[in-house]
Image (cartoon, rainbow, N blue to C red):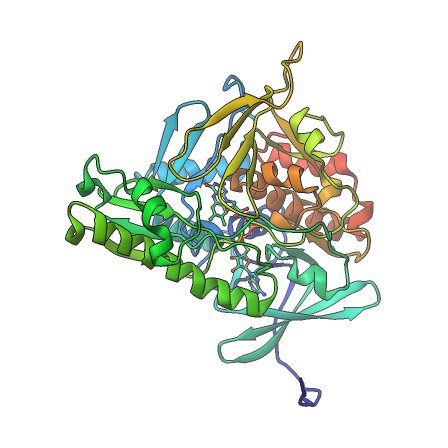
Length: 448
Ligand SMILES: Cc1cc2nc3c(=O)[nH]c(=O)nc-3n(C[C@H](O)[C@H](O)[C@H](O)COP(=O)(O)OP(=O)(O)OC[C@H]3O[C@@H](n4cnc5c(N)ncnc54)[C@H](O)[C@@H]3O)c2cc1C
């Protein structure tokens, strides 16, 4: 393809702060809040018009357990717990208590809670602002270049936290990514009203039976209700297979294909369901929900065994108990593996679960796992911390840790490590994990 030459340009410096967080999901907001609470002047950049990432723009409304797999010990606190408490005051969270306590969120309320967290902490927000590149000085980032709605600009900071999911900042500095094959497929989420009016009619079976007529391949999905909005459900019914959404053109076609599939599901229900006129499409995600793209190579790659055998790390900055959860990348189905050795496979929509074991019970089964600071500390680039789903992990390790209650904690750790790096005037690679862990504990996190 041919190219055009853009002359070098002067861009206005719109902020000069201690720490700049790029990416404003809960991961990013929590990084910013932890750094601000320690005394840093913080800015946060988000390409959407609201904070929250997959949880708000993507409509994904479930936070998993804050307890271990046995449900006997609380293992997650910090800003996740604080945010749950804030949402409770608005009746915007419901906690169900089957095998693991699941938090059903009203993510429209979450949007406003995140605005308030940012405002209360004096964090400078840049919404509708796209990170587009770095200005480097040696092995340090001097400033990030952003596209605001009214033009290009620069934000200078002493420290940066990459919370963009895809590792956009890390990639721009030349940090390597993990090349390990096919990714878990993304889903376009939607809110549908009126599914309860279908009564006992099995819409999942209908979608499976008639999907081909509407251009759907065999697939698997899930849906959930939303606190405070009776009759409205959040649906993640389909996947877009075999894509790398970190590539812009692929992301574009996946957005369109994802929306087409939402309509196909609706059309099947309208055509074959008992009361076709009573369901309605209430909302469709602002952007397709991306489960996985290449992670960034950091100082340690968290493995599936680390997770499933509950390895303890001296530099642990997060705890988790969410099972290994692999949405098959080549077709329908999902595999869950638990720390107690149980395995559950759902081969396709409406199919019976296949329950077995991936290993025999141990004398004492682990009940939770940990994420080490090294998995979010890059090998080079002295003033950048990673956070969220870009963390360094193998495929099966990643498939468990990727959930939000875990990613939120990586944000808190990244914001804390960035502050300590700034405070001691030394590279992030030289920040003592014991100091990060101490500050996290003092701020309400559980890292033991
Ligand atoms: C369909 C689906 C269902 C899921 N189900 C669950 C579930 O039930 N429970 C659960 O806990 N987890 C679930 N997950 C996983 C979980 O949601 C993600 O792994 C997690 O949200 C990742 O967090 P993150 O902060 O790394 O990324 P994101 O939430 O994707 O946040 C990245 C943020 O960076 C911003 N950004 C990206 N590029 C730029 C840029 N260039 N400039 C500025 N901003 C940028 C984005 O707009 C976004 O706000 C699901 C994921 C998907 C996709």
